[in-house]
Length: 165
Image 1: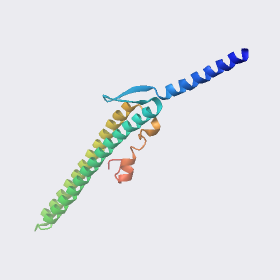
Image 2: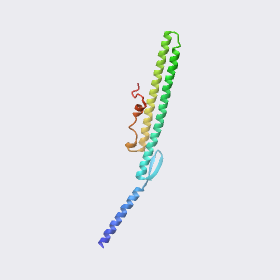
Image 3: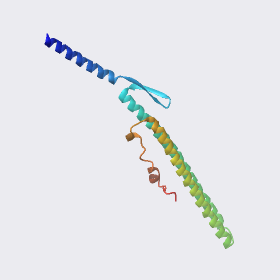
């Protein structure tokens, strides 16, 4: 009789442990993320939601960076084009002083235009990364998937000088 009670108790305990494991794996939850809710299993769905959230923030950042780089290159190309046009016009002048003055102005205008393009690029880049940090913080994802450590590579890999010269 004692044997039968012990076996029954162990069986019930084993069954209860199995049931708890199954219930824990299938517990639904709600994660609120920027006003939308996602339901699913606790561990896998939570990780999936956080990864998707970070992915959305990364996609928005990369799209904005792409637009900012395009704007930078368009501005820089315009500066080179304007310089070429101004220098061409400068060398049609007939006096030394007029040529010297026009060349000096062409280079001065070029320097200002490229400086403005760089300043705009760096400002946009800082703003885009700040927005990204704010967006990704909402995700509450582990640091290993946040993609925060690559900010300076925007300058290094694009060939832009990070010191603003």
